[in-house]
Amino acid sequence: MLVLGLTGSIGMGKSTTAKLFAEAGVPVYDADATVHLIYEGEAAPLIEAAFPGTTMDGKVDRAKLSAQVVHDPAAMKRLEQIVHPLLGAYHKKFLDDAERSGAAVAVVDVPLLYETGGEKRVDAVVVVTTNPELQRQRILARDNMTEEKLDAILARQLPDAEKRKRADFVVDTSHGLDPVRAQIGEILAEAARMPRRRP
Image (cartoon, rainbow, N blue to C red):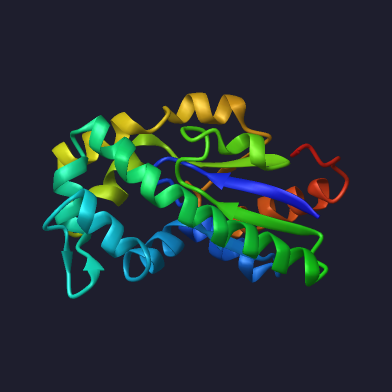
């Protein structure tokens, strides 16, 4: 089974692209959805211990947690040390299940793939991109998003141009869904012929 890492900066259309891979019958692991899951379960007491006052009713309050870590790289590192091992277990189970189901290709959707060295754990990387104007427009349309918050998020992410340069495949979401579907079809056809690269 070939594992594709799906990544892209905020507002590029990565979630939509992940849905279209799933629509094409490919098993997709969603790192963000898994974070939501563990924030409502096993990670909550650990995060409360490390960052007091960031949980409510046994669940992580993402806004309160974000306020404590977004401008503090050391706090961010502490949070990652709690979350990454838990995510690792879910990730492994996903790959085992996909392999058992006989899937030829599986997709792992990881926003900070390059930033966390995740490209070494996949066979090829798909980067989702769009033009900068459309990106900002999409992000600033979200609830509770401000220019300042957006700049803090972008500062933590590898620039889009660098991601595109390092990618095996680039999907451009600037022109609607049909071109993206076509690109996914081409990627899956090519992935089926690629050698496995991960350890």
